[in-house]
Amino acid sequence: MSKLERLDKINYYLDIAEAVAKRGTCLRKNFGCILVKNDEIISTGYTGAPRGRINCIDLGYCVKKETFPDVRHGGYDACRSVHAEQNAMLSASRKDMIGATMYLVGIRTDTQEYEAGANSCQMCRKMIINAGIERVIVRGNTHGEYIEVLVEDWIKNDDLLEGKTTY
Image 1 (cartoon, helix red, strand yellow):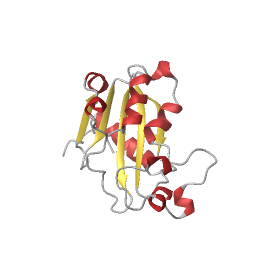
Image 2 (cartoon, one colour):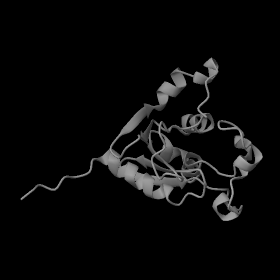
Image 3 (cartoon, one colour):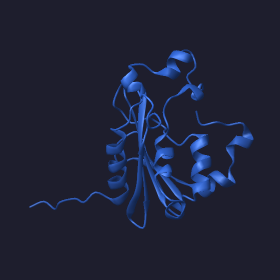
Image 4 (cartoon, helix red, strand yellow):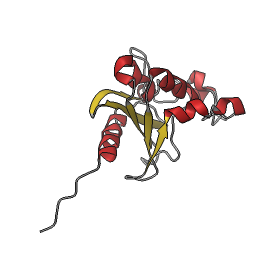
């Protein structure tokens, strides 16, 4: 008789974040995010338009792509979506986020594959730092693969001072 293998905690939480991503409404890629503190989920968030606004999935087109058709990395002011990380942080209290871990999964809508090299954008990074979140764990290119970022490293190594962006 074979022994049942138990899923490790990191992939357990990443799998939940992946399920949350399936609520996303972006036509290009959807992210799901959960915040965990003391082994308890304190908040979730996914990619989508602000409450009350029409989502791109309902419009049937991407406003950003229509406005900036040739811009791959940029034009984010035209994007209708609030990022998954932002939505998760908006739904949690700061006292609960201090020392928490954020789990993040991105999925491309065209291929249903994980978003290669996914990580938080500069705006989300700044918010994560101010929220007091300690770690961000992002699913890699395959199930079971992930990267772990200590938020303290974003503070110490401010890549914006070197002119680097994450888009």
